[in-house]
Each structure stands twice: as structure tokens, then as C-alpha cells.
Amino acid sequence: MKEYMNYLRKVDPYVPGEQPNLPNMIKLNTNENPYPPSPKVKEVWKQFSQNDLRLYPDPTSHKLNKAIADYYGLDESQVFTGVGSDDVLAMCFMTFFNSEKPILFPDITYSFYPVWAKLFDVKYEAIKLNENFCIEKEDYFKENGGIIFPNPNAPTGVELPLSEIEEILKHNPDSIVIADEAYIDFGGQSALSLLEKYDNLIIVQTFSKSRSMAGMRIGFAIGSPVLIKALHDVKYSFNSYTLNRMTIEIGAAAMADKAYFEETVQKIIETREWSKKEFKKLGFNFFDSKSNFIFVTHPNYNAKDLFLALRENNIFVRYFNADRINNYLRITIGTKKEMETLFDFLKSYIK
Image (cartoon, rainbow, N blue to C red; front, side):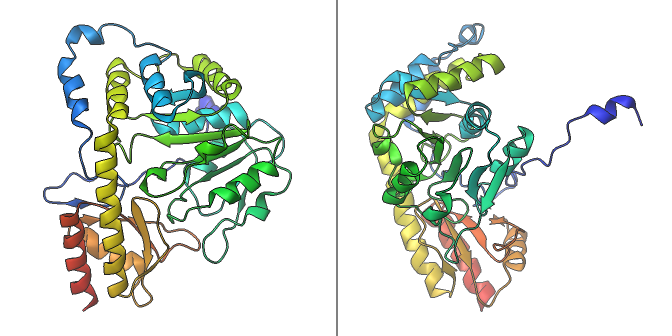
């Protein structure tokens, strides 16, 4: 074996959802938005020239950060942007989780958390969700080096009430608490209202889900100016130009189109609530999702068998071969027509 092989960093990487490219497929496996981005995005896209790409982007992402700040009624010093929320969360791990104490997050959660913890040599404890797959806030009332959780949770879709998030913040004044709100726009209550009371709170959101821009990779964090400055310092020590010129312009345009955003989110919410009724008719069990997906199981059918049967019919959903959830499927909410096709197949399969 070559000597240098002894020094390669060895990690167990995060495994993203499958990205098939087949004709007439129904893709419900990666929580993408089934509707296109705001029409204002296309307008900005058309205005770009080759000369625009000759120059470096603004390293401060001022235009995009200001658009996000204006939307939420914040100061620009409270906003940090990165290449998708994954980039933002990785920066958060590097910036805030440097204690010798373990950070805390749920055992059933976004599977990138343990990957980052191992990559950045962060001690962690995965705390079990209760039998209803809910966070027990009291489990986080102990010494720690930081706390992170998705809200609504992934892959369950269960929301942690705002009052319980505040209880966690109250009991952890000396720890950074990160609320990963990738799916908050689909019916959850954001922790934004707690920012003024708790300077140890960081909120992370994304353009990938509710703003239909997964392919553009925009994520952002909101917090106190002190914490946001710390994130920027780490970013500038790592990569000054994380967002390209086009992304900054397009992101700002998408954020400004509130009416279109609200319209498409409402479509997804309505389709999700209709889908819940259809799943119930077929005997599926699931949690009351506040996200753009539903986490389902059936008492009479094996989830992996169903996953494979769907896949053979070009309907892609997400199956996790993991402890406690290996008989569940996470199904993204598509268009009404896509969901009708899904249910036609399920009716046939169950019969």
C-alpha cells in the first residue's frame, strides 16, 4: 500500500436521495417542489450576459442578504447565506460546535448531522425520539456543547411546538441552539419570534423546498449579529466566493415575490391534506406532517417491498433502511396529478 494512503481522511459520507432521469417518472423521493420558481427568476436569468460571469461575485452577497432581511423585517447583519442549507449547517458545525461536551440531536433526524459531527471531530449524542417520534424537551435539559434539530423533523414531518423550543432555549443559555427549518413554510411555526429574547438561537432555512430552487443551492442562517459575524469569519477563512453572481440576483428576485411563494406553498399544503385522507382510506398510518412530505407505514405491507414495486413503475419515493424507521416510506408531495397516479398504483397494489 502506498504510504500516502495512511493519511487519507476516511469518512462515512451522507447518501443523498436517488436522482433518476427517466421519461414519465414521478419523482417523490427528494422533497423537491413540484412547481417552478417565481417568474421573476426567469426575468433575471434572461438579463444575464457572458460579461456578467467574467467578474467575481460580491463576497458579502449583499443584495441577497438584504432581500432576506427585508422579507423578515431584520437587519442585514443578522443574515448569513451559503450554497444550500447544507453548506450553511456545515459552517455552523465548524463555527459553533467546538466544545469538549457532546452536541445533542435526535436519533431519527437529518442524517447529515452525524456525518458532519464525525467529519469535524465533534462529540455528539443522538437522543431517542419518544414512541410517537416526538422530541421530549426534557431530554435536552442537560449539559451539552450545542443543540440542533430539524423543525418540522425530517424524515417524520412532526413539528416541535414553539413553546417547547423556547423551553429548550431557556434551559441552555450557554449553548448554541440551531433550529433547522428547511420545511417550516409548509405549516409550521418558525422560531423567528424568539430571536430577540435568545441571543444563542440560530435559525437555518433554504430556498430548495418552498421556493422551488433546489437546483440553485441557496440556504441562509438568521441569528444575532455577533453569531452571524462569526459565521462570516469562518466562511471567509474557507471560501470567500460561495455564491455566484447569478445565484445572488436570482435569489433576491425570488425572495421579493411573496405572492407567488404563498400561492405555490398553499397548493402543496392543500395537496398534502388531501393526500392524508387518501392514505387513511388505504389503511396507511402516518404522523401529522407539517412539511412537504408524509412519512407513512402500512400494517399489512412491507415498506421495502412497496418501495421496490413503486420504483419498478417509475414512481420514486424514499426508503430508509435504518433502526426504528425501516418500515416507513417518506413520500414527497407532488402535483395533484402526480399524487393521483401514486394512489392509483397503491390501490392496485393493495387489492
